[in-house]
Image (cartoon, rainbow, N blue to C red; front, side, top):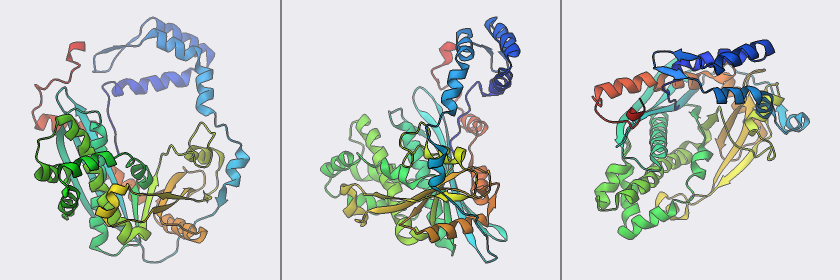
Length: 405
């Protein structure tokens, strides 16, 4: 997934050592005096002067800040009442599962953003790793207000296409995807104006565009196919902003294929979530509440979420019905982390228990190992971006911060 290395990451670990010492009042006094005397830390990134007033504020308000960090505003009993204890059991049978993850990273320049994205889908059985489908892209995007969202959408396209490609190559029982279907689908609201604009330019635009992006390629087709149809005669800002809509449509087009053909096998798993469907008055998301206030293996009482596609798209995608998802939180091993699960369609309690049984076959330290392996294979590090930067010889391109050095 996304990881950005800032210029000061190499010395940040030093600050954590300082924070651990702050619990002792004597050390707090010593550290405060030292920091207020402007300690200079040199870690091969230039001299970084710690700002005394910020350190002083953090020390003076430490208890208040920590209280806010730990506050839940939820009664433990409420969390336990929504938690169903269940100990998953793995059975000795042939079982095949795929796992998909993607990654992105970028470097910003004054005239463009250099970005890299990739995705991998890995196939596992009881015998271990079998095969993988992997793809990626390096490119430049002009500055715009939604440039980073475009990069995320393009990464999602590659994730969906590698998943579809691997599923169609052979039989499997489950397809695990890192992330959330619902999070993407909710963000489709508001794209109808852009779609109407394209239709006004060419009444047959959407039909031509959907047909064009149906090519079975592990690539992002939105920009190429859209400009082939309408040319480049639009105002640049309008074109750049609407291009995000077309990339979302390409991603949705692949997801609809997955839902229609293999919906019963798809499982989206999130390690983080901001949803508060269970505890609406909590400062913390549901995932954190269940993680902090429960310890047993099991799952939360499931919620069914129904979403509608934008009306302007239903006819073109040949998928008019609402999308239904069963959402719950689960812990597969005692005292390990809770994560969020979304499955396509409305599922019963027995369906959920069977799913947890199946996931337990590949679980290591409370998390499905194939997803962990996919993350390790796909991660784009800061060092990788520096190599790409050097390969492209972008040394003379300004990043805009040179005047501060």
